[in-house]
Amino acid sequence: MIIRKNNQSNFFELSLRRFKGFLLCFCFLFFVSGTMFAQYEYLTEFEKLYPGCVDDDESVIFGGRYPNPWPAELNLPVFPGGGDVQLVRFVHSNIEYPDVVDYRTRERIKGIVYVEVVIDRCGRPTRFRVVGSVDELYDMEALRIVENFPIFKPGSLYGERVKVALTIPVHFTRNKMPPRRQNYYYDDYDYYDYDSLDW
Image (cartoon, one colour):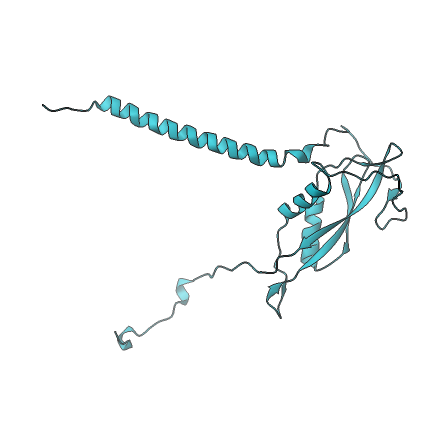
């Protein structure tokens, strides 16, 4: 007696397995993308705090290299998501290391670039300038990071919003250069006299 499998049920089982695999992959990607977006969701925390806010008027700026020091009663601007910890995390996760090399040691130069930024009365970062330089490429990278800051909760003094200057340190601490991939060009290969080799 010969038992033949039904081709139709075989096709159905195969389709069901493929569908389960597709569904599993979709759920995994949905979970991963959800956690990635949730990581940076806190950055928009203060965007709707003052809708339509525009701070074009000249006013007193407290701190930094401006003539008005921080008063004791000043409430400093707050970075979204928890203040200084999230600010440091933001800087660290967005840093890209330019190739600034000390050619004597053949290692990357380390240093801290200090960038001054004014948080206006709407919480927007403005007036960026480097106040402590290490190297021109590092300065440009530090400015790029600080210019991409999200909206802060603005500083306040006696219940009124004020402009506050903050000095942000951007640490360039990696000293090892990433290994460079060696490019091979097929026109540059060496010719060997294979007949002269001792096999």
